[in-house]
Structure formats: structure tokens, C-alpha cells
Image (cartoon, rainbow, N blue to C red):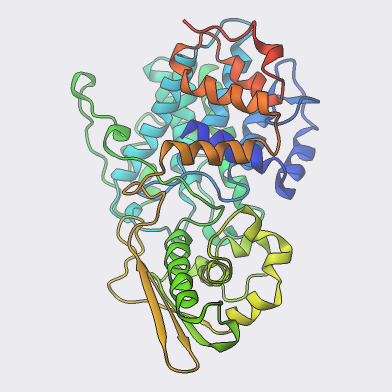
Length: 441
């Protein structure tokens, strides 16, 4: 999860929305600063480094997802990395410290989501990282700051008052701000709690607290530490192979399979012979976009991904480039594409499926169905494919030495004495310049 998040965050530094938030964040200055990923030329105060790096992680909707639905890593990792750098002048934060704080942040998100049945479905009202991600970031930063129990409660209470963003801003440049704000606000909440700011210590137990976000919120007493089962021991995450809403990954696999059948039957892809394309998916309104006109809309369009995968056989970062979004062949196919919502196809990342059917003018129909795409937690990416994704993303921003340095550091994180080595690689410094900083126990 850490490796994938760093890779998509580095790739995201090249996006227009990331450039805009960097320009905004440069107006702030502080004696304490943290790395802006992919940039050697400037640093930012920890809050704004967490914000910018969080925006970068979600700028292309390429970051991890799990069930119940949220993007768990992007809200936490930028915050704890920025905070660990702020500590570095006073004391070293080890890789193990960083790893434990990260896990706490993921765990808090998962526990809060499991207190609601509503949270198990693809959301309709608000973007989950803005709620549970903000809480997870606060918990992770509270752990790294070694806050006592009272101050931890206050950190979560403060974070709850920062939480929430409407889903109406999906498929726009504002959506990545949700994850950036979750990272920033969680860090800010923990820092305010450290200074003694107080909130409601019962925030997690109240209908007017976390219950304000989920109508069926029902918190449970957690097991003791001696018998505590961590959620990441029970459940993996989905790691995306291309940068788009998770629901479209079922569509891509089904459409790619149909394309293979069409080519076997016709030798070439028969674009001019296609009469209609039917895509059977759950009813998720913000991913129902018949004619997307921007990369953000295309990333949230069942129709676009179906047509793009039919034309090309697979999806990639380049699929969402402007020239591919507006190519005539794709626009022609979009006009022939229609969604259907079978009543048994529920809007849950655990249970949804996609069926794609292409009917030709001669009456022949070619169909295929995807129940679990490659990258889903039931069919996780192989280690070599995860590494290829990271290297492909990171190498667009960093040197080969820095990219390999991140890979080695993440795989040995529990042995690293000073986690600031990770930030030094993320800034773009080469491995040779860092040889004296990388100390493994």
C-alpha cells in the first residue's frame, strides 16, 4: 500500500490540479518544512506538504481502494511522512514508527467504516476519505506524536469537525482536494490537540458525532490489545492497474475480453459493423457519464472505459489523454453505448459485476462478464506487477536511482533507523548522495 501510494503520488505531481495547489501552498512559510514529492527546488510547511502530496496521490484516481469503500492510504501516508520530517531536527522517527502510525491510521478508518452497513455500498452523498480519512490521518499523527489518551480523543474530536465533502464534486479537479484536505486536516487536528485544544471525548459514540455521517452508525466496543485483530490481517486492498474509479475496472476487464472475441471472429475490430454496446453495471450515478469531456469525467465514466477498452484492448494512464478522449472512433462508439442496471447488481465493491455485450449489424452478439478484476482483493496484483506499476509511475518524475532507493527503503521500512531517508528519495535526490543516510539495523 505504501509503495503504490508513493508511486501514484509521484505520477500525480505532473497533473494540472497538483500544479495549482503547489502555487497556492507556496504562500505559506515556516521554519519547519517537509518534502514536496518530486521537487528538489522547494519545500513546504508540514501541513501544506501533507496537503499537496495528498492531492497528488488522488489527482488521477489511481490510489488504492478497499471495502467498505474508501481510499485508505492517501489520507494517511502524506501526513505521517510530512510529520516525521518535522520531527527530524529533534529526534529520529524510525521506519518502524512510521509503519506503525500508518497502520493505526488505516485501522481507524476500517473500524469506523465497519460500524455502518450503509458504508459497505458505493457512496451517494459524501466522499468517504473526507470523513474516515480525516479521522485516520488524525489517529496516525496522534500516534506519531505519542499523544496520551485524552489528547488522542481530542485529536479525533477536532478531526471530526473538519470532516465531510459532497460527492457532487466527483469527476472534477476538486475531488483530489478531498484526500489532500484529509491528510492536512488530520495532521492539523493532532497538532492542535498537542497544544491542548479540547473537543468532545465521546465523538465516536454519538449520533451527533460520527453518527452524523451514517444514518445506521452503530459503534461497537473493540477487543483488548491482547486479542486485537488488525483489519489488514483479514482484508487486502484493491490496487488499480489504470487511473479511474474502481467500478470501471470490472468494465475494462469485461470489455477487453469481448474485444478478443470480436477479433477472433472478424480478424480486425469491426467498429463500422457495431450496432450497439450494452454495459450492465450497478446504478452509480456519478460514474454514469455518456459523453465525458475531460480527463476527470472520463475517469468516472462506465461508458468511456467500456469503449476505450473495446478499441484498445486495455487501459493505461495514456487512455485519459485529451487526444484519446476526443478521438472520433471513441465518440462514435460512445453514441452506440447504453447502460443497464440489473436488480441483482448491487453497488458494492464486494459484490458488483459487469457484463459487456456488443451486437453487430448482422445480428451476432458477443458478451463477457467480469465478477472480479485483476487487482481486486480477491485477485490481488502479483508482487512483480505492483513493482512494475510503481517503477512506471515513479520513473516519470524521479531518477532510476531514487526510484530504486524508495523501493528498497519501503521493503525494509521496519529496519530503517531514520525514516527521513524516504523523504530524501521522494524529493528526487539520487541514491549515491544518500548512502550515508540509509542505515539498516
